[in-house]
Structure formats: C-alpha cells, structure tokens
Length: 245
Length: 232
Image (cartoon, rainbow over all chains, first blue to last red; front, top):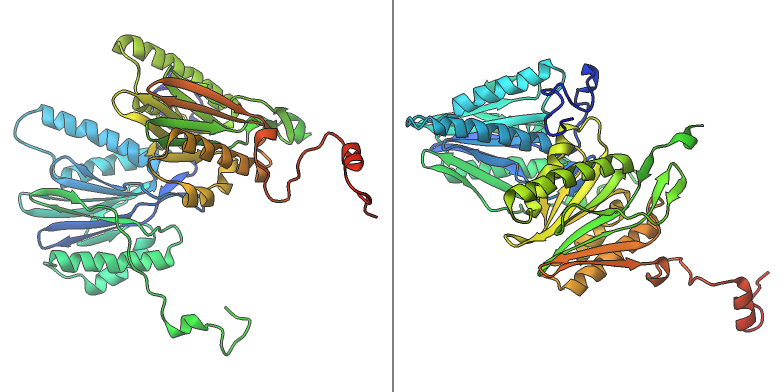
C-alpha cells in the first residue's frame, strides 16, 4: 500500500474509485498576486497571508519564488498545491540543468509547462487549486503570463489574480505604460496593494515585492503599508442618516 | 441515531512552541464521539522518533494511522541514514502523506523536535497538506480561542520554563472555552538533553473567568463558612 504517491498517479492507493479522486475545495489559501512589466524586467507583488476559511491564520507565507535563473512564480489559491508545483518545477529545472548544454528554460517555457500541468489536472476533475503569475527575462526579452486552475492562460503587460482582477487591473489599465522606472513600478504596485488591503478581506498587511531582470531575481524583505483613514466622512459617517452605516 | 455513530474526533487544542534551545509541545486530552467523551485522558502527543514528536488533531483514526506510517518510514530512514532523522524530514513525510491523501484525511498536525543541525523546530501541517515552518504553531478546534492570546503573549527567545508555562496557560484557556477540548494538559519538551514529559491535571491549572475553586462537597462549604451560606 503506497501512501506516498498521489492517488491519481498510483493504482495501489488507499482508494481505487476514480470518483473520490477530485479536489473539492481549498483549505489554506493565498489571495491576489499582481505583476507588471517595467523598464528592466518584471515587478510582482503579493502579500504574505495564508487564510484558513475566514481566519487569517498564517501571516508569513512566501507566495513568490524564483524558478531557475530566469523566472519568478507567484501563486494565489491553495498553498499545499503551490508547494507541490514548486516541487514539479524543481525537478523540471534539475533535468534542464543536467543536460549541461548551456541552455536553460526561460519564462515562456516554464509558463507553457505550467499551462499543460494545470489544464491536464483540470481535465481529470482534480485541479491544482491555484492561479499563477509567471514572470521573467531572458536574453533581454521580458515575459509576463498567467495560468488559472482551469488552464486559462495568456500573457500581458500587466496581470493579476483573484481580487486583483477586479481591483488592481482597472488601475493598471489606466496608469501602466511602457518603460516604467523601478520606482514608478513599485509605487504603482503599492497603490494596487493598498486598495486590496482596504477592500479584500483576505488581505494581510505584510507584503513582498519581487523584481526580475536579466541579472536575476530579488524578493524584498517583508514590509507593511501605511493606510489612510482620515477622511472627515469617516469620522461621522451617519450624520444626516442616524442608524445607517 | 446519528449521534450514536459519530466518528472518534479529537476536537482538541494542540500547540508547539520553540524556545531558546528546543521546543515545547502541548495538548489537551479529550477525545469525543459526537457529544460523548470517549477518552478523557488521551495522549495526543505521539512519538515519531527519539527526538521528534507529533501533535495530533481532527480525526483520531486518520491521525493515528498517519503517525504509524510516518514512524515506520522514519525508522527505516534512520537505519539507512545512520544518524537520527531531522525534524525537517519527519515533517516532510507527514506532509507527503497528508497532501497525497488530502481528499480522504481530516487531520491537522504539528511536528516538533530537536536535531543537531537545526536545533529546535516546529512545523505546522494543516488540512490539505501545506507545510509551514513556524516559531510557534497552534491547531485543533480550541486554537480558535488562542490566536489573540498568542498575538499578545508570544515572544522570541523564551527560556524553557517560560515556554512551558505559556503552553500550559494557553491549553488551559482553550479548554475553558472549547467544548471539544478538555481533561488534562500534557506537555513534551525536546532539546539537546533529551525528552521530558509532563502532566498537569485539571486541579493544578489556574481558574479563569466565572470558574470556581473545586470543592469536595457543599457540606464542606456549609460547615466552614459563616452564617447564611444558603441564599434564598
């Protein structure tokens, strides 16, 4: 009896009925990831929260990780599935390195691999419950793409997952432009992250911003954003309509 | 009829805390089948190796079988490695089984131990099979009542005694409010010197809000106190 292999790949598992092998719901989840292209490469931001239903249970989860020399992966959704994806990618990069041929997988290839993995799991009704953002630079070419748990994938100048789709992308559509400086890029991401902090209840105020350029990947230390509550309307919101909220 | 056939579940409060030199693991001792307390003195802190222990919560059956498998694999691993297994390896084995059987298992676990490479370490493996290394971890139904407590009371680099006192206080607070936790507080302390197990029965624990000092009988109160003890 082999418990160590996943049920979908091993016939001799705890349960052999096909129907029980489907992921129904996530347990520990991460919220939005946002990514933008800028002058030197890609900037990506994600908070460090791992929610357990409505409880903000874990507040130091790293949801962005470097992949090989040229890519950066950010994930929202089930953290255990993200950790498993990192293991698959570890193996992928290892085999790539073992060729020892001077070539290395770039972000486009990694994105393609992830797309196949996610789509094939979806077809078996056993998805990896994540939305992924894959960014990177190789030979001066910037790349930013996204893959969802059902295999929807595309590239763009700016991408977001989860709530970020609704709150961050409109801001990015308005304010993103070609050749953003590092400072402007960071400010833009922070603007989006602040809105998410105000309006996404799964957001936590501890985030990291990662940058990937031709030189490599840097992920910032965790930090918190200041928030503004000093609107006069906030002081007395129900004046003129007592009892309302 | 439903309540007569409920699975054994350890409602539970489990805690694992690192301190300056090792770890302290703590748990309550209640196992319930529905509303009945099937075991009021369970030991939820299970040994995996000489230097690594596991706090179990959720389904009693699932957590027991998982710990049996991990103990079996770790035993073989130790023989093949030629030295004591690290806490990280133990935690990853727990994760592997948890993750690959996520559809069937319902158990949240805390792995804690000491090894010579990394010292004292605590790993949380909640439902779904995520693995997270943490300075401290709480789990089980009783843990809901402890997030605020730990936010306030936790600090890095405690002494062994401070850590143990914190764990006992926390489990005791959770027992006070969580119906699925109760009984005694058990702790296991693991460091370079070895493993120490402690047992804190209910009467040694502090009293919280609206709890009264236990008495043998009303008769003792009546005989010892001043006139008018019976209020009409």
